[in-house]
Length: 87
Image (cartoon, rainbow, N blue to C red):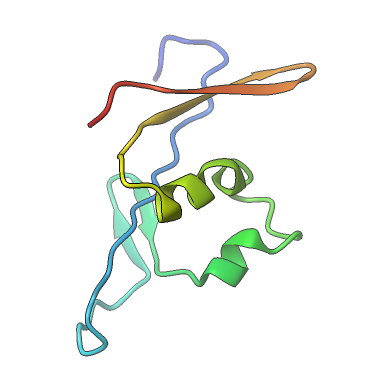
């Protein structure tokens, strides 16, 4: 268990470009949770509340050329985010 009493967990977003012929059957359970391919429209759907943070950094991931790790800290007034060191 994490020592931070308010820690809720981590989310991983990975961008990959694969050939149309590449076969990787999902969903699959991994140590971090469930790995599954999702369409961008599914991610941005307004009723999709399961990955709320992704909408804030996915456009940067898709359009940027630098890799970042994003850390969200939630407050009563919203949230703050800061890119950490480049990976």
